[in-house]
Length: 98
Image 1 (cartoon, rainbow, N blue to C red):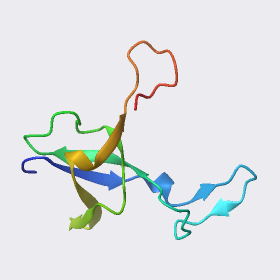
Image 2 (spheres, helix red, strand yellow; image 1 turned 120 degrees about the vertical axis):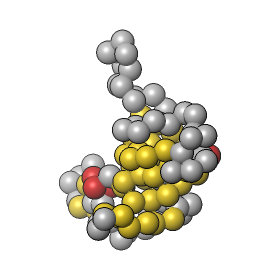
Image 3 (tube, rainbow, N blue to C red; image 1 turned 90 degrees about the vertical axis):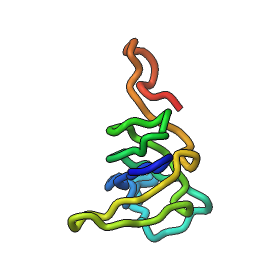
Image 4 (tube, rainbow, N blue to C red; image 1 turned 180 degrees about the vertical axis):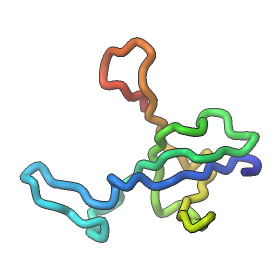
């Protein structure tokens, strides 16, 4: 990876979701502007706040897809990442920071 680029793999859990009533909502359903979660697989040398293995929140409209060895990944700029989810060191709270 070069410069401020981040290579991510989209969460498979983001494909389908369930409503509070238990109704399955397919991935193709549009619900306005919805952000997506992904796992970071590689980062460029100028990326400062994201590390390999982090789980990040991003806008799926601001992405480019790339296929490597039969696996589909997304290519983002670091500035397109809205949040990073990581476990807290203290073990208190929700376990995520945004």
